[in-house]
Image 1 (cartoon, rainbow, N blue to C red):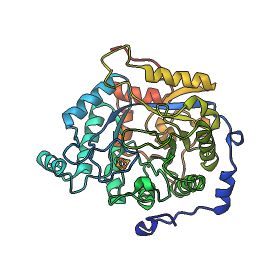
Image 2 (cartoon, rainbow, N blue to C red; image 1 turned 120 degrees about the vertical axis):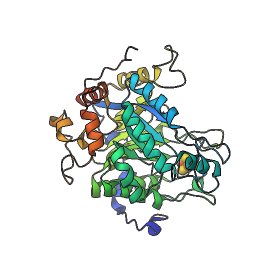
Image 3 (cartoon, rainbow, N blue to C red; image 1 turned 120 degrees about the horizontal axis):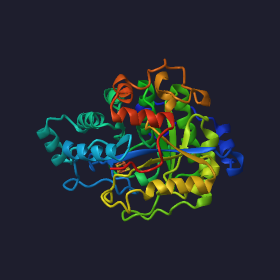
Image 4 (spheres, rainbow, N blue to C red; image 1 turned 45 degrees about the vertical axis):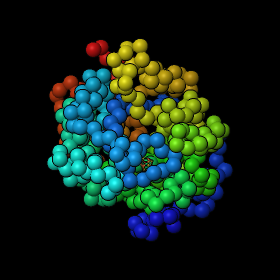
Length: 389
Ligand code: SF4
């Protein structure tokens, strides 16, 4: 049983023989994909408050310094994103601020919200109104919290990181593998298309990596809800000096992920952190989100290098590149699935249309320019270029 799993009553079946099999897998044991996908998004750090202090993390700010985006700020960013052809509003932040963040709680209360998740729901409404599909990564959630947010999200996510008890999560306030597994299970129970992943290089062993991937597979086999697994390497930063895993290590971990997971689950590496072109032949078939809406958005010379980099990665790896929605097509209702002949069919353990809630499906079906953009992307008709302003 993994640390913390008892507390949450999470039972995960990881077969010892399967672990041994994965430990012998290398890049030559997996197939290179024929294409890689990406999503065009805007990044919205709704708050930088987090109850934890993971040693590799530069995202969180301490109490007194943590920020909270106003809904007007959210609206400005999602409008820019929709204008720039994005489909995804990526709301990412750490676990719910604890009692130390008095300022954040006071501000939320003044704005009329019970807590950060109540506020996230309002921010998702703004994104939908302005023409983007929310994908929220708000840290760990209970089943009830996940169910509350499900109608407003096309997909959601949380990184498992590892099933091991590592010093990187040490301290008085520490998240546990059991807590993360409980969140992934909660997503499955409410039928939420889900993104998770492992973090490589935070003190885990090769066996821990194999067990982490098999734990994700076990939960996916129960619920059919995992759409992609990110294989992310740690990077040194101002708060830590973790050594970046070598390319040989990453090639082996990616191959291990590809061998561990069912074909319908994509393996993603973040191209800003990894040498993605050198990992595609190990089974990478997704490059995650790319955002044209950055601090350099107003400068056309710098607005789109990220997208061009994805084109270059695909060219170098010898595969095609296509854009996808934040929710993978097999989770869409049948009237919105345009490549039904591709073999990547929906998991029929849930009735057709049950994955994506009405509010999201209706947003994609809408007759406005945003609905048209979503359907173009779902159909594979989106240009790999910058829309004219
Ligand atoms: S839970 Fe996430 S946001 Fe919070 S400190 Fe850890 S990695 Fe950073």
